[in-house]
Image (cartoon, rainbow, N blue to C red; front, side, top):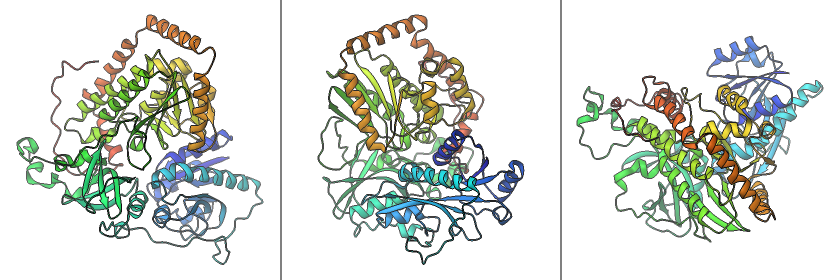
Length: 596
């Protein structure tokens, strides 16, 4: 069939559906529906057999849904209606939730039902964004595939919304406002605080006040040991801050300063002089989600930095980005970076953890990325907020290159990449530095850079990617800028094995595979073959040459006259909206000593 997607954003769900439906022989076209005109033009131009809205915030015009079947993917149980379904489910502590595929009608979310699938929720659910990328996406795929099959049969008649039926457990709820999300630090227990923040993560965040600044809170994690006066910041770690509650504490990893509170509105910032003659000790960046400690900066003076070694074995809940565990001859390095973005500092922390793992008397190192994302490469938000984004881009790409370099040059261990979640750009290439790549079924990969303003990319991709898939396929993947599913990834050799199941089941399968490698009778032969292959490759062309060539191209992207990368990054960071008024960046000085 010819299927048209009308979607507000081509996000992880719409990409997964595109992959699944294309794999079943359907022709899919995707339209970013930023208004009724865009929807009408797309329908007129494509003349689709079926319309699917994977994630649509605007209503479908009547002239479309009255003439064609348009299936809406709604992240709620049957009967649920409204734009804040997941927000209310997480805040209210629902035990089960689901996804319903329904037909567009005059009233939003009130059309006939084509399919519905539910899933359990823990007592304190994961963040909304994580829930969406995992349980919601899996249920949505099942529901859409079922609905498409029913549509093709031409015999199915969808069920009308009927609240007299016992299975219609949902109800119409209003959009959740900030007053519904507000945290009362003198009354709310830790679980309630975590639920409120997670229900608003990754958007819109919970509006709160810190040091007199109006900020949105993101990235909530329980803390069982630290205590303090409710609302007080009692610690910091890896860029996160810890705030006390009435019965414990909660880690908050990211903040975003509300736009209208930013000092950009001062007369000096708007003048021709700009910030050059400003003597303010602190000027936070507005409108950009950043690590909490970075945004607050000197305001955190006196707040203790509580370091937690990656090897620490814990019997309580707390927050840390990287941890290390040994079992069955395998050193497991777990890294969980918010939204998969890796700043310069995070890259170096990961490199140090990997080097520690390499120093241990194990045989295999398993690199486990996050549940939502294995990695998405360099940290565009941190770069955008830097005084000199070009220079920070350069620092960041060199830092992640250093991580890849250490993995590629590991001759003492077999390295396994464990892709529990999606990966993009340099984060997808990072996995290819490993000797074995295992991925969870349903993971979506975007192994390309070009859509970020023509960015060339590094991470030794010109070596690692052709080594895996061949030169011709590597060019196609990096030029086409399209998502790739696991069936294709395994077929072309991008990944070695694909395992089904949820993130926990996948992790167990990877651990078993890694342990089996460590116990192989011919393990030392594996290492010898790996060493010999690396020596042959180095003689043919040194890794340093690949890096130098890539970074020469990246240097032009960062410091050259074409601003395409900087404009694309700004658009990405601000979600297509214009940023608040900011003084112009100073011209980049000559950097004759930038190392490659």
